[in-house]
Image (cartoon, rainbow, N blue to C red; front, side, top):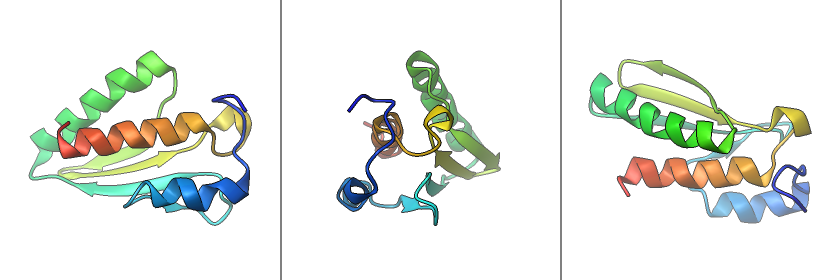
Length: 100
């Protein structure tokens, strides 16, 4: 399996168990996470850090920001579902939230 191969749905529970706070959509085509920060500056700084990594990986999140809230959805549009690119970016996002 390559990083851009659609994940076998049987693998998703195990992978998601390693990603607390992420939820699987009803079609198993995307994962999402709702994040709240202290203020707009912290939320926007987080988005900037993720954007730089996403650009290097050529894998961009679908997200929105309102003041201190960032909602993130990850899917691989070319694969029409989840791939390891989504899981790896979710892991990076979790580390960025933790400040690591």
